[in-house]
Image 1 (spheres, rainbow, N blue to C red):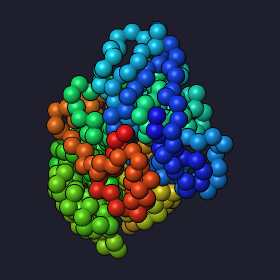
Image 2 (image 1 turned 120 degrees about the vertical axis):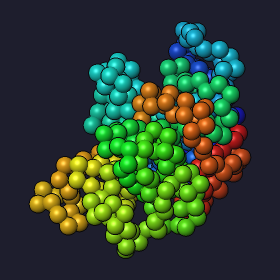
Image 3 (image 1 turned 45 degrees about the vertical axis):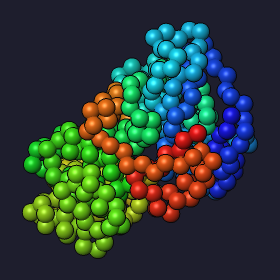
Image 4 (image 1 turned 90 degrees about the horizontal axis):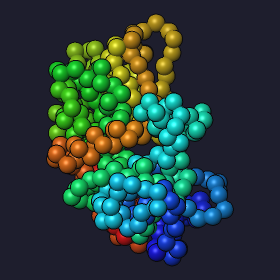
Length: 346
């Protein structure tokens, strides 16, 4: 089969490799579509070689069951679904509590094994997955379904984790209207009654936010914080979701989150918010506000996201690429030239 593989720092290639063999508790998935994520770029651009063997990329996977392991029950050949991106132990206290995204087996790093990042992924014609990770999607289009497995999942988990701050009539800010941000705007509209303010450096991304239901768009810049504060009577936004995570966006979040508000760090740009134990006031950290670094989501979150997509509550803006053009898709993503989510089709 063909597979898009990371073969070393800043190097990806489409290679011919064997179709994976499956074990008794696995499924073989014929891939229908695979989303391209900034996490893929983080791996591709990592400055040192992390392993000797090539690694097939791709953790946003939608496809059809091609073969079923001997011990698997309840699944059918030809069934369509998406793959939950964390392959966890399933037995620790976090997993049985429904917090699979921080499985104890992953230690302090708390990032469980993930296809395309630590295990062979789905930017290929076929992928082996544990049967427990398969979530049915019915007749949902694969191009729509693949990004639901992470772009929607991660945005939904961050938003659900701030639900106490998302009261009707309040204000939520989404920073960065890319693969995650554009669906976050839709999720906020679908499950809360807040006013949604989108922030981005690119006017065309704000146009996308408006298409997705944002009430207002603000160009990132020196006066962005003032504009948000003015919109909220000087108090700040009830929730700020940062899908970029660089210093500038972290600073904006700190300056604009309201007292008792929620700041959720989702983007992994390495930004360092200045949160101090000093007296609250001015641009500093307000009283009662919470900050949480939000990773992926749970299996339950993924089921919720699939339901939202099936109900037409969220629609993924996608740019389709053939698998052979995967290196170009990654380059365009790196340059910020993708509208919504890039999706590869084998």
